[in-house]
Length: 412
Image (cartoon, rainbow, N blue to C red; front, side, top):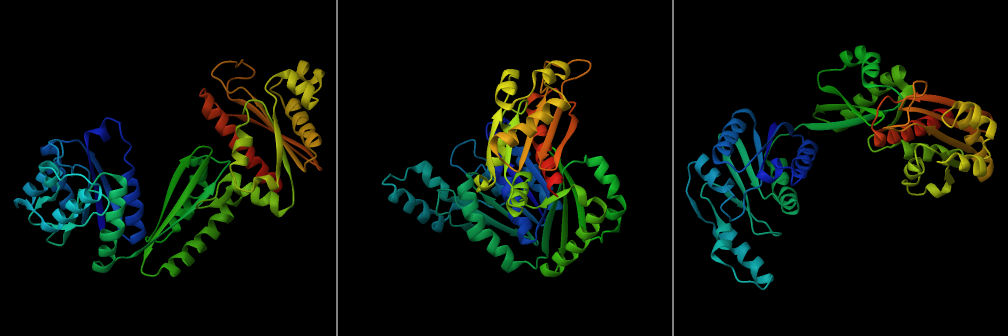
């Protein structure tokens, strides 16, 4: 079964409202075993709405429509549905009872325009909306199902969970769809794809891979479709083991894992503590680490040594080092990492110093040059990053996540 989601409203196209409905509906349909193959967003124009219905019915088994169910002149979805299915509008008695009850509960008078909420195409089945005045509508024709839902997210979710999804599960013979996300860091999408090319080609047709690049990481999603979930999970695990042999060094977690949560687990399991010394990342690294619940068990604190005087006076970076090599140098971050570890009496110290941009770069040290270091009782290891981006916020984020991955690799 394949589905199309149609979201209607000028406000979506103007960027005044973010379309979270389509995202949520896609995830719930996928969990149910229905694959969403198209998502369409359009404005309040009758011809465009009718054309989108015709196109969707030709290419999808299930169509979910949200928006445009209000009683005002710019709400065109109901009259367009009546015209598309060639049936008149009429007052639906069950819908009228729901609308009347809602207004009575609010202590308000049911006005003629509010009464129009109960006017529905005669060929649809009304879906009771206990959270609002706009009922959902279920149309079924020639083995095609079209469901129209309000655009208000809470009302849409209520109708989906209480009416639509249970009916799909009961009515349709649906396959299991199982998603597994493998998260990698420290490697670009093209390099990872090159490593996994033969592996991807070896996957059976019912397991489809997808690369999802993000900020300083690349996710590989495996989507398996079949009859038995347990069997799908077993097969996906088998192919993940093969992937580990090819790119295991870069894999840091799965599904909801984050780099910060993963290094937290490693630190706790090894009974280690951590302190940070940050220059170019300005405390963002500490923020990521402390965003994990329970991080106080391993994170002791940090210093944002943005100015060289702070590096000298609070991290004991020698004046000779700063004078000879500069703040953005291997020598400086090595001293920062080692000395913050000593100052906070922690197992591990890490540091950052770089040129986040958009200004401040030189020919020798262009914008995006960042040095990071890791210190423990075995010594200090430093690494140079060339981020190559003049966007300050992106450089700070990428540098912070590079340090997290550096910690992971050093502790592994």
